Image 1: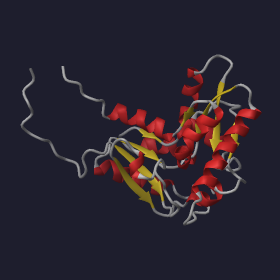
Image 2 (image 1 turned 30 degrees about the vertical axis):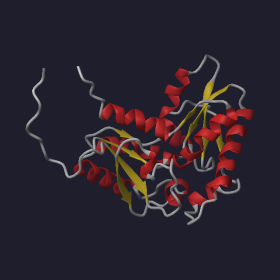
Image 3 (image 1 turned 180 degrees about the horizontal axis):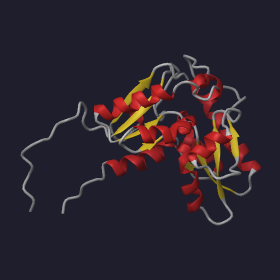
Image 4 (image 1 turned 45 degrees about the vertical axis):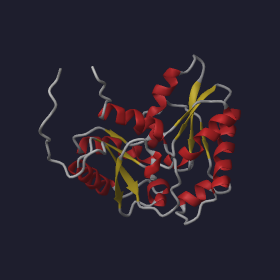
Length: 243
């Protein structure tokens, strides 16, 4: 039987939060389920806001001029004591390689990185599709950086009633029920346009509150940043079992 430890080792500023999250600087409501709401997570997380990284600048303007700010913030998270880093916008797949090269811990920038794995889970002849907050801003470069298979179908909440506008325009109020309708209708349109659709991957981290509604409406499995980072965190802090 192992003897109990009698000494604790220091060296960090913060303990117990293995995942560090690089946050956009935003003011829109982050309801439970949203990545930026700490109640969403079944484990502690550590947030770092990247100043100047507005939703509009990151999504619609390709995160222009923000790489150094994200690298600096990622290094601060590591200095604070996190074991792995993620971001709260799927469009930051653009910076996956640069962030991974800049810090000594694993980096998982985007939910879109799951696409290849999800496809392997599905019955032959089926494939996953993407639901994004802005199809017009989601470029081939984003998809390539995330390792998304060529030809992956994409649908969007862009141009609908509430969700995309409220998030990307950084509004102080969000009509949650209208946002839910936007997400469900976009998912149904994705399924309707693609008979071979076998799963949906949510690009946007703000879509997680509606994942259960999308699953119920489409009958398809729904993968999100919550799935991805829960898996990621389990690799950083594997559970210890009594032997």
